[in-house]
Length: 438
Image 1 (spheres, rainbow, N blue to C red):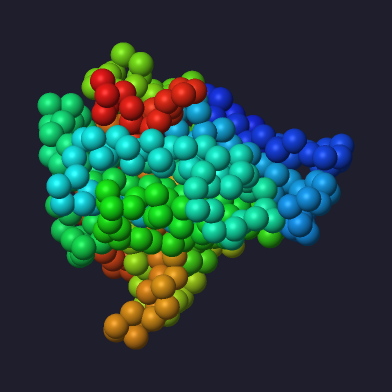
Image 2: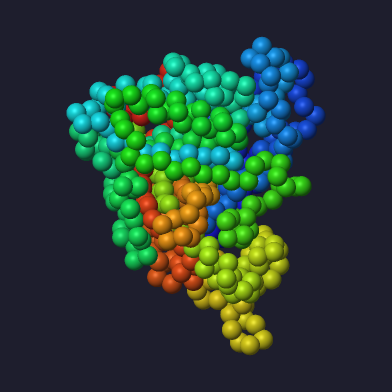
């Protein structure tokens, strides 16, 4: 829940072609309501790992009765994200309401040849599904009545992938394992992996349909290592677009980099001249499963919760005054001579100005997996952050949070992964082709 700035509405999704959500061609004139305005905001979360939701308005979803029905979909169902482009979809795309994160390990004996064939299958399936078309083979029909619903499918490579495919000479140094953090309680079975896939959509059935298609396409080439399912606020759930609340009830998301920022590209994406060359236009994703200790948190009085975060719970304003978007006054003192924003407040420690300007694009999903073995809710954040270099983005911020963040007493980092996500495929290419065939 690091202090992250709400991304600008709708128009900020227009990043490098593929991140532009466009409505699928309607059979009748477009709806009067602007679809661009309804797309919502890029979800943002903090480096300690609390969630931000998508905020956007949209009418109630109206499913198509049959495949032959020519009635137009609502904007929620008809919005489409481009598969091909400079960057992969699902990075600067506005955050969707449903998500799946899944990691695969290549099967014993599988190597570079099998990996290339798998990425070809996955890319063909993703390209079809993101336009609202059936999967290329063996479609289950789960999403038969739905449009693309802003579906995105994003692919990445883990550190171990390069050993399995004998491509260690092409493994970027930015993919070196993350350092150990004192607060980590990581489950290795739910961490890392050879391959990583992120699926997001504004309809749960569309997202599940893509998940099943990706799993089926894996065939005998790869097996699931772990899978995690998440959610965010549904477009139209609030009377006006606004920053979402995380599972702690906190307005979460006031400092995320915006696509309109002049330095957004250089902070989030590997430059065209960067190394290795196959990562040009790509980004690095840090994935963390962060359980929130909700039973403990909810017993805290409101004023103490606000001291932990450094912001008002009602409106997200910093304790130094103003509104949600007011800059924090980190040097402001109260009548009692104490800092208005405590020295160990999460918002203070995670602020870019406290971390040498370190920036990452936080784009996460909340999760709830029932009750854990200890009887407490197994709920929290599927934290995903994007940056051109995790050594300059995630790592310095998390190190500082690890040393003194008041929020650390109320969260538990239970799984972790780091993945190299190459640039978007050109027309006729599959994701990762420049790595596997370069």
